[in-house]
Image 1 (cartoon, helix red, strand yellow):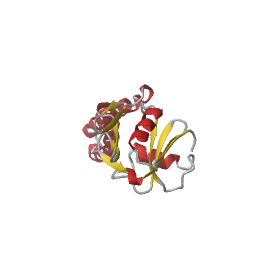
Image 2 (tube, helix red, strand yellow; image 1 turned 90 degrees about the vertical axis):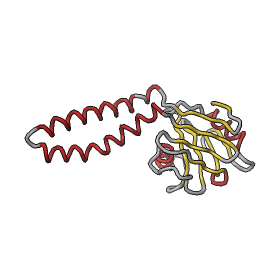
Image 3 (cartoon, one colour; image 1 turned 90 degrees about the horizontal axis):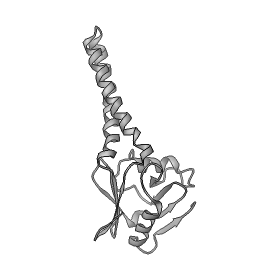
Image 4 (cartoon, rainbow, N blue to C red; image 1 turned 60 degrees about the horizontal axis):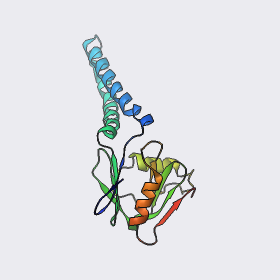
Length: 180
């Protein structure tokens, strides 16, 4: 946690046990490249090469997005404007306090509930996807909007984020610990 004049900055690096995923994705990309080269040089090069090239697009996207977490970790900035989230491959986006209805830390994640769409973050990003995936377990309505920061995936102490939010959030923003 880095105190800044305008707010508090938290860098969410991957925990050691989660760092193997980006490394495995890079290995998969290298193996894909080797397989593509050998197929293209073979007797079925045209059809096999096209098929492997098409398959390679999502493999490349997956590998690059995973590796980005090692090179440029996710960053959260909590300040008077709201909660700014900078994803590894996406520009920083701020979720204003007016859209945040509450923050809680049940079990092994920090949940930020929002009343409206979450400020320009892609629906496939890890915090939004985790919120949708865990909504039923957390007692949130299906289709609800929010962010879920998993403390077992990211090197994040829930107390640090809750403390920063409690310091910068306006009156009326609910900040709770424990199951909610």
